[in-house]
Image 1 (cartoon, rainbow, N blue to C red):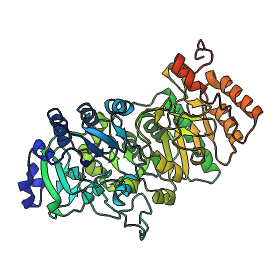
Image 2: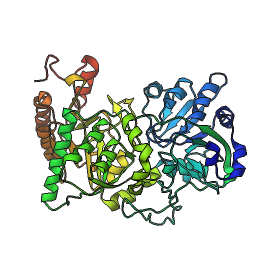
Image 3: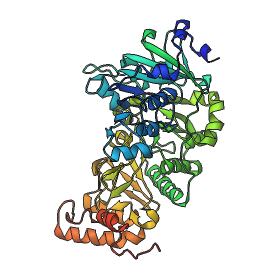
Length: 503
């Protein structure tokens, strides 16, 4: 019975309906909810909030770990519940509200949100809503398939609502490692020295009297939307495997490599699949989201251990993995995202970070967030946490989009999320550009030769040649630097000659 999961018997009197629990959340409040990339989100209370907003004024600031599943961001946006959203999202409906200016979206590095809460730059949290497998005999909250920012939300909130989800297996207990850094300016080093380091508690420790309501639910996590590898993503993976093999031959890496991090999404997941047929072995991961590829690598005997902040899987992989999560548990840890993404640990472990770009330019600047420089897609997520601090900061993308009308490599990005100073390796299906220790003019030559699609290469070379003729350490034709984006907006293509076709 779900009530058996509430081991502190006195708390069973707190069981209420989702609607009654949601009544604790009032207009103008700041609410922290569990959920990290469609995993482990509170599911019933936000739906009750959306329903209530149809009959009474209700606006909140919503802070999560990352994106929510089960169309919750969509429902909350369409019910006009959200006045402000922090720090990441991926829902088309909410995206429209953000780009229309209805919802104020704060796009943060995922490691920073709870630091801002802890130091009162943000907050305070009025109510935290946390999905749990169970509540311990001392009132500790055992999370489900993600940790995200849930621990700090629960610790700092005035009141906590717990959703006990009976569909989440009790075998998840013991998977989590809840460590909260000590306060500045006397913060001690975070004692994570390897992906498998366990340094905290298997539950979120809070006084049981803070738990104001408990809701019993039986709703599954949403499946991820990643697609299987295709010809282009397989080529990207092949280029990266070849490069890493070269690094091994140079003696800079061994065949165990360094701990791997991969961003969410189809391309990053497909690149991780490239390790299946590679010569690399005894791999480890220190990442945010553990995707299908993580468990494929486990099953292939390639991966020894994986640390993350959430488990986000396709429907078929979820149905395969979650029922036997106990078999993987000794090789897994789920941590708070401020620990999974902490610069101190990323630098210490020497992470190889693999993240996805919307576009990058010939000098190595990367745009991860804004289409055409103004339209928010999802957010920077954790890519900046890893890029600036990784041993190798790798960004991957297909070289063209919209059937070849758009180039993902441009003279100058329309929005900068990762500067040239933080980017080491750029990869498209065309090839790989190693930018380490290169001056801007040298980087541009390597990018044009190795990453630009052939149908755009002549135009890119012409831009660069004319910019070099004008001079400068980082040559640009300022009046033309964004002309490719202007053409795309006005004509639907970045080609100067719209009739050009992909060869």
